[in-house]
Image (cartoon, rainbow, N blue to C red; front, top):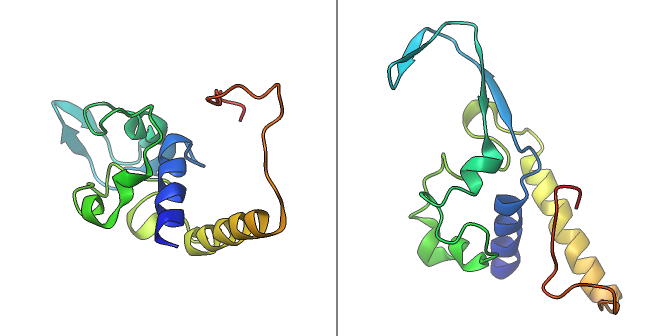
Length: 129
């Protein structure tokens, strides 16, 4: 199950369910010389953060080992946000993670999966899938 969780985390890093989060500023703050007034909606670009080469080595590569027990501690929790973070993170996070694991186990247990001759190897993804 540990490797399945690593694959699940890496999949969510590359293709986050919510590619952008929004938060409303509770107080006026200044960030890097820019004043953000109270009440302003601020967008958090999760997709961009998850693919930032300053944060992730080879961000376009699928590498589940990023989330191994040895490496997980070095990941800043504010750079991996598939369900948001803090008191307003996704209420269904644990349920969603469990359902995905169950679906993967069911697929692998009950079906033989194979590519067809038209499938490009390596698989090339785009924003639609």
